[in-house]
Structures are given as structure tokens and as C-alpha cells.
Image 1 (cartoon, rainbow, N blue to C red):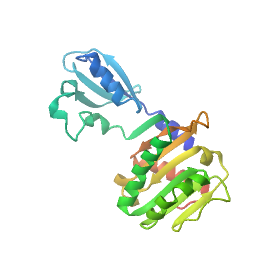
Image 2: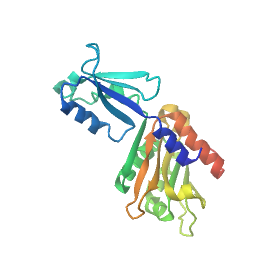
Image 3: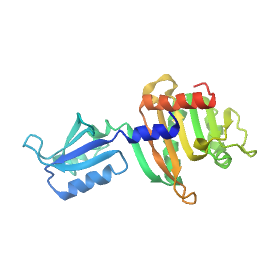
Image 4: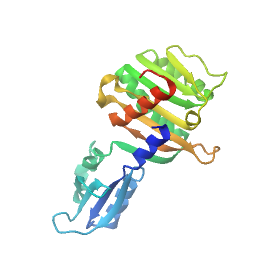
Amino acid sequence: MSLREIIETVESREKRLTVFDPPSREIVRQLREYFESQTVRIEVGTTDSSLSGYAVLSDNDADGEVLAAVDLGHLGDPADERDTSPFAPIIEHLDDTTFTSYDLRQMMAASREVEDRAWRKGEGTLHTGFQRAGAIRQQSDVYADLSGKNLDIHAYSAPSPEVPEIDGVTVHQEDTRELAESWFVVFDGAGDPLDACALLAEERGDTDERLFYGFWTYDPEIVDDILTHLDRRYAVTV
């Protein structure tokens, strides 16, 4: 699969959150706001008393397998003002978080999450698609620091004579549309699937706005799909 096809595959994995007999419209508003950036369709329904006042997460397909449920009566309860979100039973089933219209600031923040995980692990392989040589220059100090760890680091961009050399970083310059349009940061977890993670997005719309559509994920199978594509398309050993 190409990088675009991987994005489309994740996008298609939409889930449905049905709010049964909500105690108030405000609860529904909170749910829509909380999950607005994720592939979750919010619906309101009525049922028998066994599920009244619950939000139920299910696959948005013909089978509609129920994945989790949360008691809406606990939302907003002072007892829930803890480190654990009241939506935790639902969130743990949302490995892939999609987003639309992320700007450069938001993309940088999401990239740091993957880079920081690689830094903390201190080993493994990190792949980063910068789109342009200028972006590599701007992040050269960050990647020089990362190269001080026992990491195998690969950077990608469109061809340019201005691509900087960074000790410990292998730079791949390829004249492909997906490298020019895609922003990605992928960490293989150094053999531990629990540490594998990735950010993958495609720049869309007006080039002056620099807005991105894509996802970040902790699903090792999706991370492996991205790594396999990079290996096959750009002859990188992953």
C-alpha cells in the first residue's frame, strides 16, 4: 500500500458511539467535542432500561460488535477529576486517531510525541518524512541529538542540493509525489510492539495554508504497514 492508501484504510475504520437515553443535551455535546478529531460517529438512541444512560462503542459495520460502554452518570462527577479519563474504556479501543486540518504547530506537537518515545527507548529505527530540505535544516539540532542515541535514523525529502548532512542520520532524496506531500514520523519500537508508534499525514488543499489530514497510531500492525512500504518503495532496510 502507498502512504495515501494507508491513510484511507485507517479512515475507513470508523466506529460508532451510540448515546442511549442521554440525561441531557450537554452530555451529547461533551461527547461530540471530546471525540471530534477521531473516527467516531456519535449517534443518539433509545433502548430498554439496561442500557439507558450509557454510551456504547461499536464497530460501524454490519456486525456492529460492541467494544465498550461508559456510564454517562459519572461524567462531570468530581470523583472523575483524576488522571484517568472517564472515557478510558472507550479510548483504549481507539488505537488510531485521525485528524483533519492540522496546521504546522499541531503537526510539530504530534511529531514530538513519536520522537520523544524513540528518545526514551534509546534504540530501534526512526523514519521521518520532511517533505522539503528546508524542514530537515530546521530540525537538524533535534535529529543530531536523537542520533546520539542507539537509533537507526532515516530522513526523507524531495531532492535538493541544500539537504544538510547530519551525523548518524541517513538521508533519502527521492523525486516522488508522496514524499513531497506526506509528513510522517515512524518508530518501530525496537522490537517491542507496545512501543511502536507513528504519525502519518498528507498535505491537502491550498499550499499557502499548510494543512494536513492523517492519523497517529500505536497499532503495531499499521506501523509495520508503513515501514514495509518505505522498505519496498525506497529500498530501506527496516
